[in-house]
Structures are given as C-alpha cells and as structure tokens.
Image: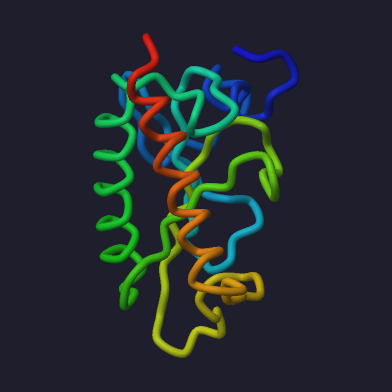
Length: 144
C-alpha cells in the first residue's frame, strides 16, 4: 500500500467501492464518470504506470479488463465501450488504472479527447518508427 494513495485505501477497504474483485485486481465506479457505468480497474498492488506492472500481472489484469468491458456493455445496454490507460499525464491518481467506459452511438465523445496531427513527412514517421523499434528491442533483451 502506498501512503496517501486513494486507490490503495479502496483496496484496503477504507473506502467501500468494489464492483468486482479477485486476488489481484479490483474494479470500482469512477466518482466522476464520463457516463454512468464508467469503471476503473486497478491492480491491488500499487504500481504507478503500465510500464511498472510486472509481466506476470499482464494476463490477469487485461483478462479482467476484457471481462469488465463486456459486463459494462451488457449492464449499461451500451453499443460498445472505450478502454483506456493514462500514464502520468492526465493520471489523476498515481496508481495504474484502466478506464472502462460504456459508449453509445452519437454520445458526444469524439474519438480521442485531444487534437490529432500528421507527421511532418514520411521520413519523420520512419525515424519515429525506427526509434521505437530500437527501444523495444533493447527493452526485450534487458534482464528482468
């Protein structure tokens, strides 16, 4: 438990909120939802970002994200769902959390919530692609 973390307090039972819980994860309603049924799914252990999450928790966390997305769609009788993670920027609580938001056609949300832009050129796009590939290769080779 991280001192002062609201989500760790929810895990500890200091704040009643659970919609779903297993040994490793907990889901609860967002207190400021985009739409009713907007849930947050968290690992019970405190990790700030997705990059901090141990590899062995990927399957359980994202398996439960899949379960929750289907349940939210069915329970809220929605047309679909939006599933998202913020890492640091726009992360109101510094505890990894996955947003699962019910969506309806013409609900007013427009794709992503920020302006999109094009690459300056095909060469810039290729440079970014190669930089990402190099970092991914280096990360995959690093001892864990």
